[in-house]
Image 1 (cartoon, rainbow, N blue to C red):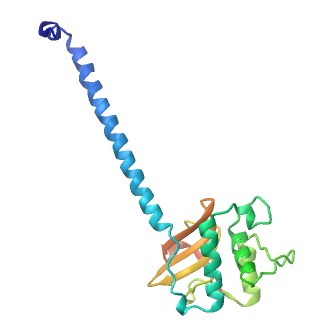
Image 2 (image 1 turned 90 degrees about the vertical axis):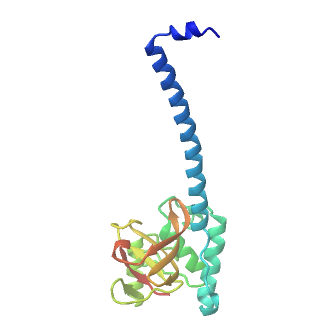
Image 3 (image 1 turned 180 degrees about the vertical axis):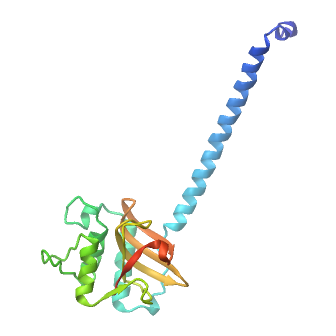
Length: 201
């Protein structure tokens, strides 16, 4: 290599070379860092997406049946139309209706007479009519198999899902149409969650 030729290169060319090397190094770091973050997120999601552990020795036979159905559907992750009789629509309430029907506790839609109640507020009205509505803030302690209903201002929007476990102020739920699938959610049970109330099992 001719050192004299290298020394004669203009300063701006040296600047371009140095910046190019820096850009390559930064890109390599970004790729490695992105892979690391992706792996950490995958590990975290995998942990969070495990079906909740439930002490079934403390549950009634009906609660055990509901947990078993939820566990099966959670593992299978079918399309939402399975629960909505083929109708393409937001299906959180369809999922709740379907699980209850499978458990031998079908709802009765006040408008159609069907076991399927596709609207969350209609579902709330159903529980009110049955005397099984427990509004948030009245001191009711949710239990496995209860159905939580949320208003439109919280992290879920207008939504419904099943209580799988409640302990020490933490509410663990499993529901359909959560990011388009059946998911587990772990939340501190407080005003921020915007629970309207619970349909008691």
